[in-house]
Length: 194
Image (tube, rainbow, N blue to C red; front, side, top):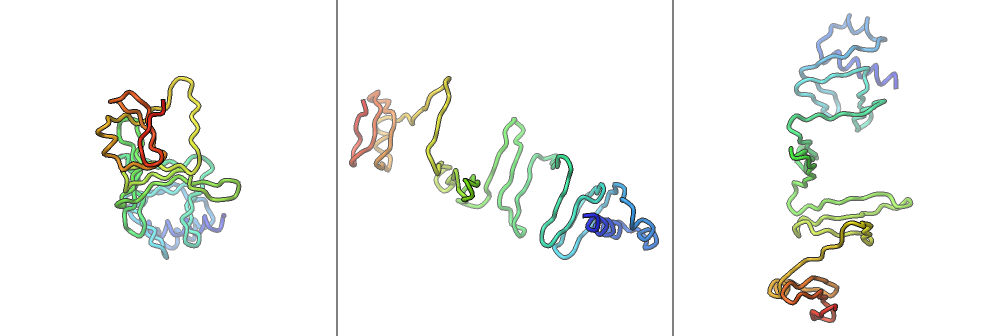
């Protein structure tokens, strides 16, 4: 780790315009925090526009990864409240603090889904898929458990006309506001559930 820090420190000093004699004198010192107006790091084009502050050289380029190693929290401060997710110069999506206490997760790719995945006992699973080609329809990989004691499950409430306009599929359940009935679609037809 110390070797990587020294290499990065030397790269930072080169980019910031320090003379060779300055680099030799400071080669074995922990560098102070230094603002850099612009810098680049080969071979993967690590670039900075604006100011980069390196404290104790905790940023490293290892193989094809940029490693930020911090003993504490890592703070990403965007004054616009937007963090872009870019792949090979193409904007894939972004995370945004929308200014109304909400966090927005946005997929910029047309009809590109948003998926929540994890590790279930060593096996990868997609727990939830939000289908953006279908207005964000949610598909859960497993059952949905509701544990509230102060609320209830609210089913879609449709008139008979709205219900008949659906592309119905067996297993659908709605509350029909025209008939004041819970209804389900089974065997190719809508039936009252009570």
